[in-house]
Image 1 (cartoon, rainbow, N blue to C red):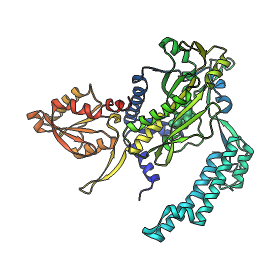
Image 2 (spheres, rainbow, N blue to C red; image 1 turned 45 degrees about the horizontal axis):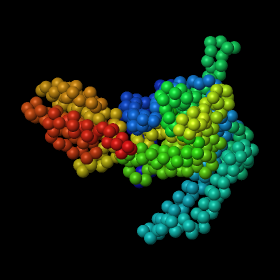
Image 3 (tube, rainbow, N blue to C red; image 1 turned 90 degrees about the vertical axis):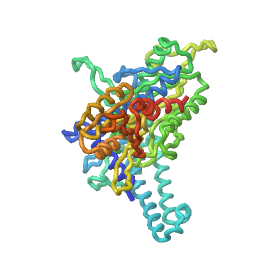
Image 4 (tube, rainbow, N blue to C red; image 1 turned 180 degrees about the horizontal axis):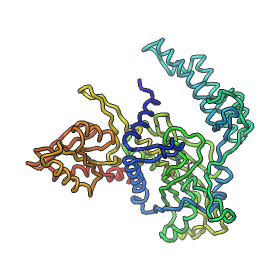
Length: 515
Ligand code: GAP
């Protein structure tokens, strides 16, 4: 059986081989946790952005889109709390000189020393008992498994305690008590655990004396908060209304793993919804439901998404939930929905000394609105789509194919036009079809290699349809239309292509599910 880890490795390799994602500055051995999107990756990414933007901005009269700068006045980050509280607990091993996130060391201890032992016990017992093995019953009665489970609970509760109390000495004690060794040096010679701010900084200004330290934004949200009155006034908006934005964010992540899941430079798609104080709970529930609907409308199989409601809330939130996605390495956060209260706007008012109140004509009152935020990582969404679409199939003739079963409206190309052979006027006819269709769809023309090989190539990049032009085409203006997933081929009149393709690859039907 292929493990999920192997699947993930294959997805990563496929992303590189077919022009989706490359390691940044690869010729210099890359830069950790930074990636470039290739020709197919950037097209897929753009389509995901369009889906999000259309569903937010185009479909909602009361949501407007903006594009704020990455650099902001440094006080922004003091007001938002990022200067003081956007930290990870880090610890160094004195022998290997390697730096680790203390919480990740503990989580890896749980996974490698406790959870994996439970898995081993289950495997052993399932071999022993064969078909009569009942895993649930085994897990709730086997003394060794129960012992490991108890230990997991103990460690998790200590981890939660030191995290909640920001108790760095307690963190170090936990690492020592668990006897955790550095994976590189094998030694347990640890420094103290200390908080490390995740924001990147740089200088603006031409001279070192006159220079000002500025931060690369760690979230796009603050560009929306500081502009909310500008947009409200110039857009004539009445509460409730939203502001949406897609843009880069930067975090100096120390644990750079899992490909594009955790990056130092990534993109967020965020929407801040401004509501009357006291109405935040209603809107929080509304956006939770609608965001899940957005994910489901893509057409992924059931069971890939779940909510994780936060029990421990950030200082600015009165409710928060993640939409978790089943990545090849397990269920992980894909999107956050946060009821952020009036924390950000209140602090911006305090630090800027500018009034950030909204006058509500319906109740004749001025107030600082409350905010419900939806925040999704574009790169994580990309990974969710890519890893779910990646499929290996054994065909009836015994051969294998790799096919990206991308939702058609997201595929980099909607249609490939292929002359059966590279002569007899077939390339010219195929190019005529491309010229016609390219106004409506992303098209690709390919005349290299045998037709079967060309189909495989399009399968591998997720092109939902291939049009083959053959000698019959020259006689009766018909082509073969091959569908990616079923591989079925139909003879179609060229004049009907536009209608057939439009019905199958357009975003419209997906957006309609959300309205
Ligand atoms: N404005 C709220 C905010 O930034 P967050 O939970 O820190 O909240 C929101 O981030 C989303 O951004 C996450 O759900 C995730 O999809 C994405 N994200 C966060 N850090 C990331 C990273 N280092 N690499 C890729 N995506 C990331």
